[in-house]
Length: 550
Figure 1 (spheres, rainbow, N blue to C red):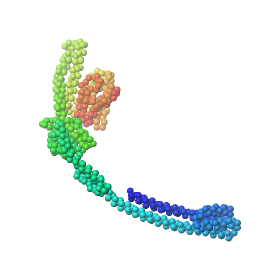
Figure 2: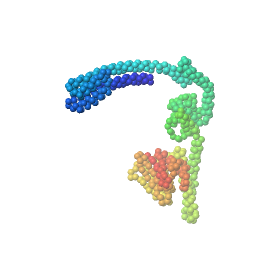
Figure 3: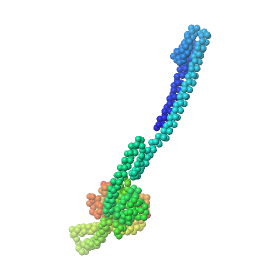
Figure 4: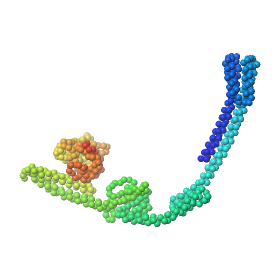
């Protein structure tokens, strides 16, 4: 900053000197005016014989201007003489008077010309001399500023550098660091304050270390007392803490894990690698199966982010007991569903015998009762079948027998299976099938069951004398089979939950188990496909199955 000020000062001085030079030259302008006026009068003098009136007027005009522009000592004397000779010439316009006027005018021109030359030379020399000295002074100031720029920062930064080094030592927990400066210097008080701070920090560290150690031991006891596996990582994926349960299921001692890189340990541990993977990216919500304590256990993994992204806590929730209960429930439903089929079949056979006219005709009341028993038997048989399919999916024993199938075959099967139901509700089933469509490689029996279930639902939820559209369309490498009805539609709030087991849309009057769509979703996803719904209230519903073409 000092260097900039001095440089500007030198520049300003040089510029000022230059301005003085220009102003001096402006002063010489009066001499130039005198020469100009004399030349004009000289011109008028030579035109007295041509146009005496104009010449006289011009001469008088510039004579007045000359009288008001006296800038030399003897110039006034010659101007008065010129005025007298002009008056004499106007009285007697002789050649002698004309020559006298010319000589006086020439004398004025010569007088001002010499003055101009002398003043110009003097002003120029003075300005150049001043400019030279100002440049010299400016250079001297710049040199002094450069020396100050080099020396003064060194004087100032030396104690600052020592202070910075001291602060760095304190930040590295070296509280024995002390600064030494002259007490009378500017940094004397700073050094004294720094030394006091370091001493207090040292005392604080000594007094709080025992508390910190006891707190750490307390936290370790709390973490180890938790029955669920817990692993703590910092933002560099270094293991901060791990409880005994986690150490057990990882089969690595805690001493070998604390303050070690989880990434390095995961190279030889599949379970740890699976857990670390979930820190950076979303993984499946499926329970994690781990073989521990001589049995299979199931865990849900939860990731808790520490404040300011300082790390992550991995918590494993043991759900083995719930998984076992779920398996027991699945086995129970499977057994019950299978056992129900025998009495249901016996009931339906008995109904067939009752309806046989050879045994005897039934009255209307008996016929209605028999029909009611038949309908409920069909419903029980359908529910039992759905429960069996659900237990197959849950138990993981769903077997697929894929083969190349035309989509029209699935549609024809579904229409044939629901023809009686469609006739009952007077529902017209329309088919929208393109001229050319690729084939599917699927388990036709299961996908046909899905399509039949969707078509049956569409008929049930349509009004009488309505229509249902079953169609196929191909989008790139996907084939979509859809069932569209024109009923009251399904609220968008239930589009995601409608495929959940046992879920039924509130206010639905049609009876059902709430398993059909859930089983349909499982069957379609087992083929690597998807099923979705497009529906608006009052606009009907459209269920779409998307499968890969062959």
